[in-house]
Image (cartoon, rainbow over all chains, first blue to last red; front, side, top):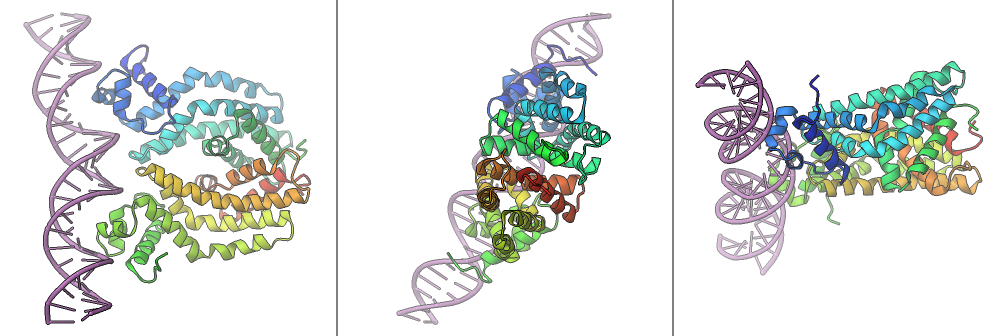
Length: 197
Length: 197
DNA sequence: GATGAAACTTGACACAGTGTCAATTGACAT
DNA sequence: ATGTCAATTGACACTGTGTCAAGTTTCATC
């Protein structure tokens, strides 16, 4: 737990995050990051063991910058499962665009496949918990549709909200953010709740 | 339109398909393929311009081997949109396991990113047409839920059935094939049709 | 049977990008 | 002055794709 204030460590994260934000995560090389941080390429390795390691740290850094915790508050304060589900999807839909480039870089990390894939998977497991909380609440209210267990419904919701899906719908299909949120809320409600008004 | 009978061309496709089938598409190198086809690595390039090119040809080859067209028949013969939707999802759920390794290799082709990604995208656009046909049929029957246009519903269904989602649900979440099919049918019905009995 | 064209082989190489190593410099504290 | 830590420079190994050149096999065809 070193404290990364305005240290080199911090500068690297900033440079990495910034490079990932412009462009869509393609071809951000260690040397690019070093250059952006005004540092030698090798110095990066003094702070991060590998590209995957740096990428993973960058997602955490971005989470802090963007106040992920605060963004989660509305869904946590929701008074019923339905509201919680809607709030969670709204939060997520507004959040993904920010982490997308990093996510993409992490998901398609060609080289240190194991490490990068693992880092991203860990990250997504955290997000799964948010899904589970909403589903659990629905279940306890007796609102969860009969076709689902808490587990399978969580799996489904989690998958529905995956970054890949977000990418396909917004990038390939051209949906805008508001549409993405509205339609995914629609799907989630109709799928998970019986009186899906 | 050369005719690939028992030619080298054909042997390469066979070797590639076979290598992709065991293992999950990771680290299948050009040299591995050449070795499996009992050919020099360079000879592969006499038949396929690049790894992406070969991979793409392999998906087509597999489609033929597995009789994709015949598998599509039941959904095409369905007498209403609902049946067509269900049949299409059932077909797809049974089909994905076979193309998954190749799909994965194509999606995560680190190098010739453009070509590989493009090849896979083309492939998926074909599959989108199957989704659209079902949605269109529902629409013409007045069965498509009010929240959707034909386009947006097709986008949603297409995304729902993506290989990434299949991968997450079956590989990560551990769903078996029957569960995948049943639950995705459930989601599609509830989402797209108003009287989602 | 010689000629020639295709298909294939061998071996070498360029290229990109990651990660490693060793030797050196600079700053700062004690 | 000494030690230590951060950073630099430059070189190198490694992996895998794709390219090139020169030689060999195979086979058809005159």
